[in-house]
Image 1: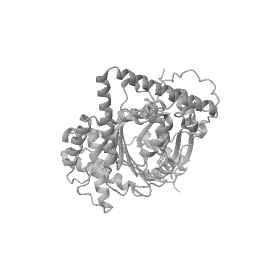
Image 2: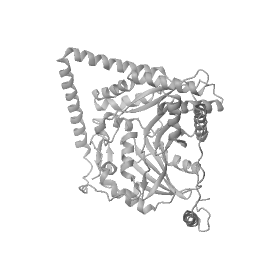
Image 3: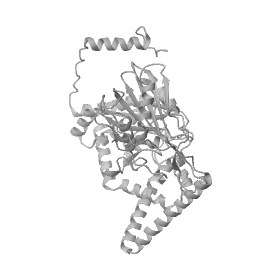
Image 4: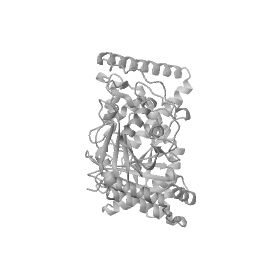
Length: 499
């Protein structure tokens, strides 16, 4: 039987913070775009997702806020769940990546309805000769790693998968909790948490040496985070007040070529990616007339801190590091070396562990105080951008027998940060999804082009010759299938989606 993700009823402080921090111009859902070479039947997609809901019980649960914030929100079964409100059909006007990005940007900029389970799946017909899908899920439900686990439930590892062994059908959903009862329950949970914290502190005090060491590490972590928050980030055109509109784009690379750069020039795959982003931002900002000499941008790099046994646990289990992006360095090899050295220093210095400790310390505060604290943190922007790297499936994934051609990950924009990068490896590809505030980064595809240029610079240094495979000869069967698909789209060979 396929394993069901582990669920908790009450949100953790970290999960709840994504609801507390959300603003109309800084929506905090994550997303991914999937493309297919052939169309998918919409009704079959709905049935496919509906059939797998028992494996994702969070998809039929609502986030319910506690009155007066006396406790963190809880997940409750939605008594009025209707999958047709979550799987939505669209027709693309245009057929290429730019048209797809424009539609997905509009959909991505729309908030998820908090009176329903916090996810949507948009089926987009008319993309090339195939189709695409945009999956949106609120960050309070998943992070990058748990999002991949969720994706592996919705997508198949084979075009002809064996029948799924589903758990027993869930009981009829209960009514949503009475607000008064919910408030009392939240208060009691908060008090229980505080009592447990007091018990743990008391046990530490029985061993003074352990208590002193714990206090020293906590103070070091707080001091480190305070320095990070107060050090600020240099100004750029994409930092500042955000609009409600988004612009999306992406850059696609060969994963084998990225690994070849890493093997020849040193560092890790993540180091190479950060060097690509550094070089791309250098080029993009120069083209916009920004002086980049002696400038170092700062990127928040989320770090997965899940233990192996937590692989199927939804929610957020992340820390972060603040990585330098040395856009002031002209030489691409030196940029890579600087990034690699800085990342080694951050890892060896335990910055991610310090940040995780600070996040854990927020549990010491009663729930009513955590929401205003989250709002206060949102007013500080110690970084210029976000670069989140999530390993995706190593093998091709399928839906209804059709292979996913491309997976484009998308990270939300926090207040003050108008440009974000999400990186995902999938099969033999590495895709960088770009999310920009439409007012601050109206030319997001120029960012994508600059990223490609930065990679080509690194590739050129390796001295490795790029091998271009000859185009395979189209068989008679393939030709008939292509012609049939074309006629099916427009009736006369003209794609039906062309406006």
